[in-house]
Length: 289
Image 1 (spheres, rainbow, N blue to C red):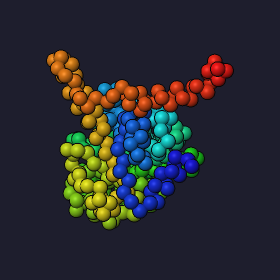
Image 2: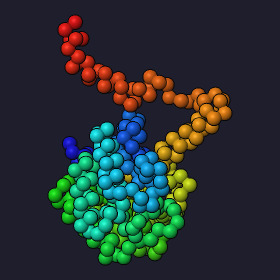
Image 3: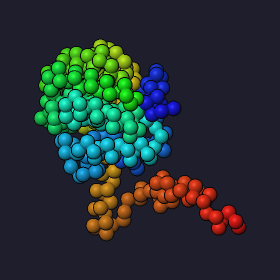
Image 4: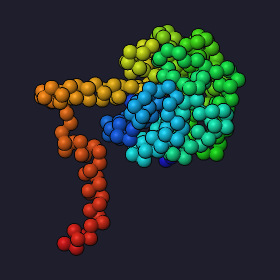
């Protein structure tokens, strides 16, 4: 089954899919090893991990595509890629979508922010006009005709123009052919319920610890009507906190974190054991003995 069809099969299930977000091949592999059925390449986290800079449009299309390709080669679960604003006009959007499809992504997110985009839970973001926003999604859907991939259409209009405008834009995205809808940064559970009640098809919630959107439990997110709950910064925040704590211990020459992963487990998760097992089949000296 192709990655897009794997994702379609998941979305056809009447359940909430919890989606920890990755930022590189290793974090994606650990998500898969932990039993999660899909992941999303967080632009915020990937920018931090790859170039050590904030998610403010600093990474190029080529850098993001390269990161996505590294992830799809490391895992078999569906990956949703962050295509930002499409990196230009409608023709750039088409190229962006086709590039992510050919890199093995199951879906790509295209949003209506004004470039350079910003994290949806940080100040200063703005959206393009309706016509340009709709042209981006129209171009993304047209590109899907050549290379199969799902389109996750995102709007950040709630911040600048209110929830009504955001819902209207998302409804039009669905009409144009978007497969999954994402209204960013609702401020209350009431708003989250309105989004799911008013919009057709699968919807994604974006849960940022300390962000603008409420963080209810999985059962409540499912009851509200979401198909996917994305956690874009959970793994990166945990990893950064662990690294900061360990670095402080090293600097002070105090005992390091007792929760450090054992070396044998570290090797196994990275793939050393699997590598040695497979490579043994090509060791003629061992076969002859």
